[in-house]
Image 1 (cartoon, rainbow, N blue to C red):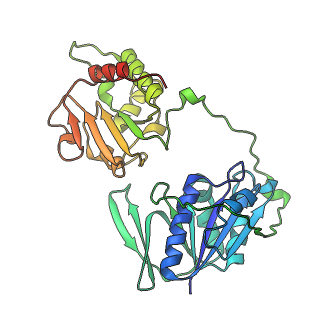
Image 2: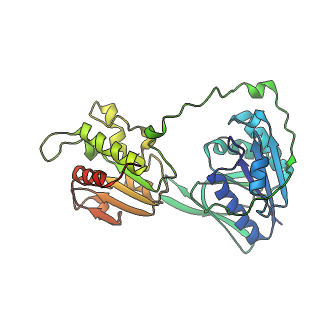
Image 3: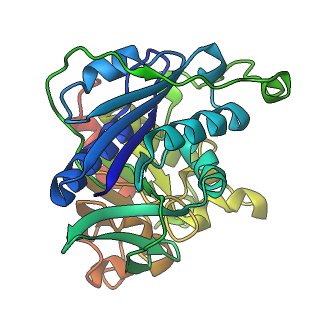
Length: 343
């Protein structure tokens, strides 16, 4: 019988983030399919709020590593906590969310316990007593289904790939696992966090709409002139009013390195595509981008795709967009902004 371990780090307030709840949903479903044993393991500054929130998830045991030493993301302490929890649970399959914090340490932890690890998992299924996972390779251009016999098998589930677990909260007292922390493990310290003001934040993973700007915004328009300042105003105005997340094609973010006019608020962090991010928003709107394959591969998980382009034969018109508006993006977005009310 398999022992399924749900492993998660808590947030600053001791709760679980959405990616962790998605991983829990996958763990609960897999445990039901295998008729195994589910164990929940948490680590962070405090674990009690998170444990109470998932008290009715069906786990037979709740384990926790808690304390100020585990409050911030740090490889040495996070790895020690995860290793201790894996050994205490005696798990055969481990499911955790592929957050930046867990992704940093899980490969090393798996090595310590003699297991195997798969990242970028998008689906987990069980049939005839065998577990099969689906994941993407080569920047989401090749999909593969895998099964392994080596245990423990650690699976990092990509955020947005599974619906989050939903259930009533309760009361549970987790078993506290002691993890000695030496001074050498405390050498890395978090001095603080610097984040942009809310109205300057352009990357919003939970936004309902992904707005992608292509290099066409900075090219010469029908009057033979460039209108970069106007483009910046239109895009920023739309982002403020719609609270959409901002994406970009590779060609646009690289303009700054080519001494060409570029949008000042755009960086490689906004890049979507084969060499960028693969977001999972319900809807996407691409503007001034030709819909070339390296860019559109990043749209694989967008629910509804629309594009604005003056070229009716661009890549978006070749089955890559649900709707293509053959129009001037400057004019369209100007009218859209006029219709949107300030949020």
